[in-house]
Length: 205
Image (cartoon, rainbow, N blue to C red):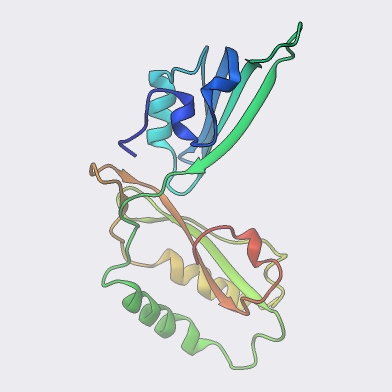
């Protein structure tokens, strides 16, 4: 993340400045603390506000760039064009449960899995809890994800998983190489991951 360049075309290898006769504006949009924010520059030189927004973007979220420009060609009149692209900046160190993945699996087994009757999930039933690990390692924003995923209709299991996630101990937060800690989203699922709606989660599981 410390390698952001000064120009918009530095953010996309397939975008060539030779296509451009004149820049009209460059818009950068990113999520910060769950709120979508925008920053604008009048040309391809990224402003301090745009660089800061990219640096503050929530870990794993898309950073969108829209370049508004007049194309370089031999036409008498150039219609303005827009080039859009996006990218994701992942933290150099992901958030980590105390003791690592194996200890997390053991915690979930003891608190949830061992307490679920064998016949609780039928067919493609699935329960999912989405949550974030904030900059201090605390579990925040834990919630059941979408009724379209929770075809099990077993509210007791749903609530058990939700409360187990909320009561997890503090994690080591996600961080970039420069030491800056960032919020990171996760999801924990119980049930059949062949559920056709799993793609909606769109994050690590």
